[in-house]
Length: 154
Length: 154
DNA sequence: TTCGTAATTTAGAATAATTCTAAATTGCTT
DNA sequence: AAGCAATTTAGAATTATTCTAAATTACGAA
Ligand SMILES: [Mn+2]
Ligand SMILES: [Mn+2]
Ligand SMILES: [Zn+2]
Ligand SMILES: [Zn+2]
Image (cartoon, rainbow over all chains, first blue to last red; front, side, top):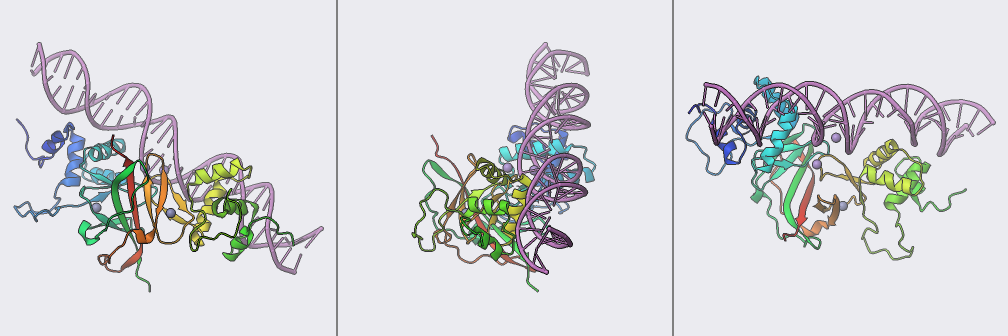
């Protein structure tokens, strides 16, 4: 009967069949909670309130920063479990480190390699005609567009 | 005066300011040579004769297979040098291993994660309108589209 | 509540890809 | 042939990630 102040994260976890452990709740709050934003009834339509793109190391750092005791192994486990349950999606922009995105809807990204930063691009901002037919026996799983950025010349 | 049978690779290397060493020549031949294809005067217009997508490990394996003594470190060095000189480009489709592409023109890719295989998509096969404006102080460096594939259902 | 047990966490080892270091070798120029 | 910078390389180091096996925890049942 004790289910105070967990920001609905326990429910969210249960909903996808994951036990709401202290670690998973904390990580979910960091990922999906609306941080400092004053709580209010201001949904912005279908707008995501907080879209985040994090690496395992970053998320672990944030957790530790908030005095949440959690191992890096658990962060990796959790990121993959969340991804498997459709709570996160993995974005491939760097061969060498994985980014996880709290926005699981179809959309694209700007990527600034110098800072390792991702910025969402609305799906409709890049209209696509139809694609060439995939090789025999294969179907399209997803279409991922990455717009790589560089500093303005001069 | 001895410059037989190197398939023009020495020249190609010199042209970009890289010493034509035994290792670099061999790797260049593997990457840019037209393999088994019968030599002939059949250019296919601007068509690339051999487009390849390789990982360092793959290329190293091929070299060793052809009895070319070269270390993995040199393969990595060479791939990066070739990329730096515009002879190759790196394609990011997998967070965990790097692919290098002999086709340096703007184009896109199908990617089959199960086999780690890349297939080119002609640039014009995916018409793009204009992109949303990049964040302040940044300009677009490249637009990379990866169409991820999965096996046909059933 | 207290158990029993399966799910979860975790420290630390292991793996995989890549880079680094410093010494040996080699490709040009003279 | 000599000199020397460029290149190669073995092996160590680094980084990201996964694995293992033991300790802890969540939770339904008693
Ligand atoms: Mn991967
Ligand atoms: Mn790695
Ligand atoms: Zn995103
Ligand atoms: Zn290609």
